[in-house]
Image (tube, rainbow, N blue to C red; front, side, top):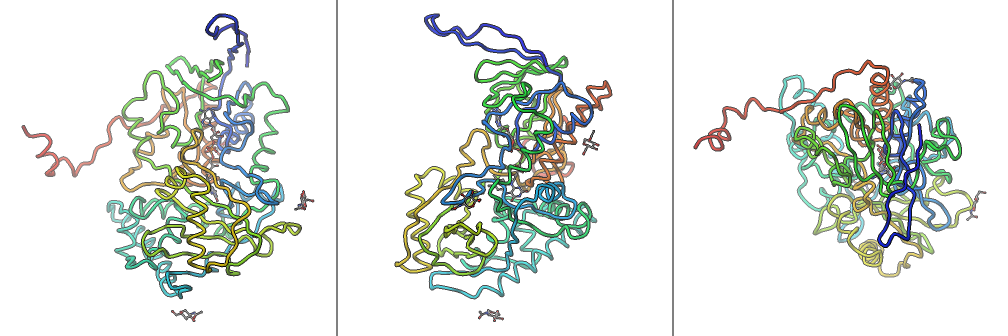
Amino acid sequence: MRKSLALSSLLAFGCYLTEAKTYTTKVVILGGGVSGISAALNLTASGITDIMMVEARDTLGGRAQDVPFADINVEFGCNWVQGLGTNPIHELALKYQLRTAVTNGDDVVFYGENGKINATERYNDMNKYYEIMSQDAVKRVQKDQVDLSGKVGLDIAGWYAKDAIDDAVEYYVWDWEMGESPELSSTIFAVVNDQWTYGEKAFGPGSDGDKFVVDPRGFKYVFQEEAKKVFKPNDERLLLNTVVTKIEYSDAGVTVYTKNGDIINAEFAISTFSIGVLQHKDIEWSPKLPAWKLEGIYGFHMATYTKIFMNFPTKFWDDNQFVVWADPDQRGYYNSFQNLNIKGFLPDNSTSNIFFVTVTQDLSYRVEAMTDDEVKAEVMAVLRRMYGNNIPEPTDFKFPRWHSNPLFRGSYSNWPIGELDEHHVNMKASLNNRVFFAGEAMSEKFFGFLQGAWYSGAETAMSVAQCVQGKCSPSEYYEEITNAKLQASVVRNTLLQK
Ligand SMILES: Cc1cc2nc3c(=O)[nH]c(=O)nc-3n(C[C@H](O)[C@H](O)[C@H](O)COP(=O)(O)OP(=O)(O)OC[C@H]3O[C@@H](n4cnc5c(N)ncnc54)[C@H](O)[C@@H]3O)c2cc1C
Ligand SMILES: *[C@@H]1O[C@H](CO)[C@@H](O)[C@H](O)[C@H]1NC(C)=O
Ligand SMILES: *[C@@H]1O[C@H](CO)[C@@H](O)[C@H](O)[C@H]1NC(C)=O
Ligand SMILES: *[C@@H]1O[C@H](CO)[C@@H](O)[C@H](O)[C@H]1NC(C)=O
């Protein structure tokens, strides 16, 4: 990396001068989340140290973020190690002795309008039909049949949500995991994603499980510790508090512009920005992104998953790990509550009583547009319907606004119905073998998960390392993605005939 100072940004009346810097480096990594850190480690391991990392926040970790809440820290972002065994995230959790607890989704109690309900049978049905849907998906692939939405996949398997209780069960099993409804999701890729993370193929025996991180150092700790292997204190290759605004690319290289006027000239760039950020046009591209790339970017979905934390003077809820509210009017309305007052979850010296509820998708957008007090009033109204009018008000109340946050624009990606493999290839394909794309969403096996971010960062870094060594593989993408069946259909007759 070379740094040079240039006098620029001469502001209005000429009396104020800021100092913008121009840097020159081989590889610039854009974003310091899990994927960026993994890319930095991989490049360093390949002997490429002329690198820089640019991160908008004042710290590394990206969506691994915890905040002080009541007398503990809670995770606003990723919370579970999902998939155990040799999952690299699991290995990091073990290496740094991250404190975790075991959640059990079956330890759940359901409430409806008239109090507690026994939804065991429907809950077991849902799980049974989900399993059948998974087996059906394999058969469909064997026969080269098209993908189905999760809704249709479940319906064919035998599950159809008939009432508010079924909706609540379905939301708890599907949306609470994927962050989006079955209508929006792909069946085949939901199964692919499940199998890579929880099947034994990738992470070996014992991979089927989750660990809920309850470490006071936060989930981010393991990633920040790994990053320290690359970036020493005050490493001038790491630019924190630096927002990328524009990326210029050509066959010759990449120029990155930042909000504070800095310019980074690089031979190669690795963007790790979330697919939500790419979709939201928070970054200006020059030249404009080609249509095939835009088709790839906009085909995918960025889901939003919002944990709303509450701390109460006393615990008034059930002892189960989870409590599900079956709202009579609106599917998913403050549906899935989680009890942190279970042995092993809160630190021993904590006196908090924490109950939190998760909303997703449209309900997330809705709460993000409301004030905290308005949201609190709605959640409390639901809790009073479950537990009566004598329950106390929360003393602490907090939730993140992932969708509105310009650095994230959502929580994690979800493979939507209609997205083909080719769209995904285009989404992550490089531009001129100069700008490469990494991040959770770019992993076709582990999208949505931390391991997706981790693998994608390393794999992309390896491609870049090959380019640095003058052995670039050609960038593969589909200029046009066609659907043979459409050619002969009514679509063609309607749209192409004069
Ligand atoms: C609420 C929530 C719950 C989750 N739960 C789990 C879970 O339980 N288990 C699991 O495995 N995964 C979970 N995830 C997903 C997991 O957190 C992500 O897959 C992973 O953290 C993504 O890492 P990344 O490096 O791809 O992206 P990011 O972490 O988004 O990294 C990108 C970085 O780019 C920075 N950036 C963005 N725009 C700019 C800009 N213009 N200029 C400079 N920097 C910029 C951002 O600040 C960020 O640090 C969850 C995520 C959320 C939000
Ligand atoms: C709930 O219903 C199931 C059968 O559907 C039954 O086996 C179980 O005992 C019931 N649970 C309670 C607590 O009544
Ligand atoms: C609990 O113990 C930890 C570690 O000793 C400490 O950092 C924290 O402040 C304590 N919390 C409370 C509520 O006393
Ligand atoms: C970089 O990551 C790739 C993909 O995971 C891996 O095959 C390769 O060995 C890594 N390179 C180094 C030098 O660690």
